Image (cartoon, rainbow, N blue to C red; front, top):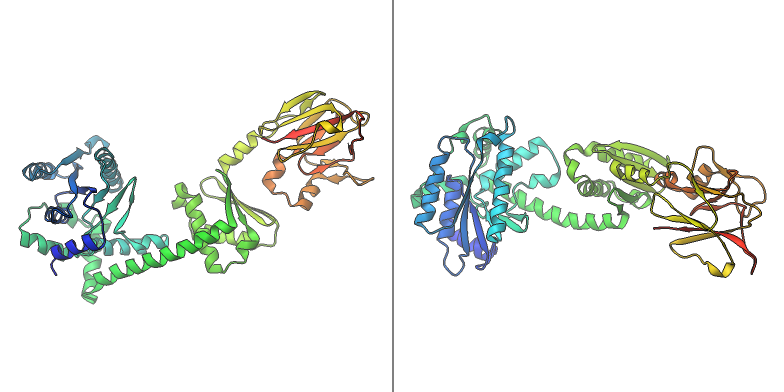
Length: 468
């Protein structure tokens, strides 16, 4: 079966697009993109959607102007919408030209897709491109998913990026071009061994083809099989991840240590990788397998509290049966919620705290105030406390008496350890003391002996904490 018959069948069987869709073809003027253009032009009217051509002149070669003029005239002769843009020479970087050119190209493609309400962007990538990409990524290293290579179709902003020639070899594409007598331009830089891909294309791939004439087919099958396995595995891993990990705020993720430790080691590693992909998207290049193993080792360690500095201002923090991924920015924001210096609290007034909560001291009878989910209260005997009260965060060495115990006191630090309070929460804890620095209340955690049970119709002080 020739390329055209096979292409026509694939378009109908795989449903790359509907007749009502709108396509943009990325055409450079090379043989691959010109074959793609010819195939689309030959589609029967019943299945041929609207299409246009997008072209970027990178101005990196002398022949680029000639190519642009040729495509412009070709589109005029064939009544095809043509959208082009030149990459200004002054914007060319000294290094990393290939990456910068690709970024400029795809940014322009996105602009045209949006303006023309196009549903698909088509490129002329083929089976040889796929093999080269897989080999390059295997050698370079990276996540397993990257070794899949080029996907036949993936999302591209609000549209789809589709490679309908991915099943065909370069040889077959060139033969089709010869039979159809297509005009195209040969990029002279394609032969230069200064480029990584060209070294694979001209030195590595020919050797593999000599070893096995079916190597292209095998690489395509490998890519397809790996994609299937990863798709199945990702669903299961994400399901597991959701059951043991959740996002507390934009800068804090919490992992259940007990549930994670119960997983098989292979599943642990995959869960950790999925977490990395979610958390460290912007710092992906800085995170590797060693960081995964460091975190898993920290989780499995017998120490109840430990910490690990990670790239990109992230911190891994174990606190008893929880493991936290904390972003430094988030920690700075939490620090801004701390009380800089002790706040004075007088009778019949509220004090607004940096974390958005408020605390107040009032003279009241029992029936006027009841606690709820956002409000906590304790009752005080006016004769037992010295006003004004002080509201502050904890300090080293803080101790308090405990309600229900007639003698002795306990360190705030030990109270936190007993209740297994996470390290980050300990620094935010709020204390209320009287004017003589006796701790009355460790808000949300413990009351002192100064906290009493109110007596009906007797005047008391009521201390109220309302969270945001």
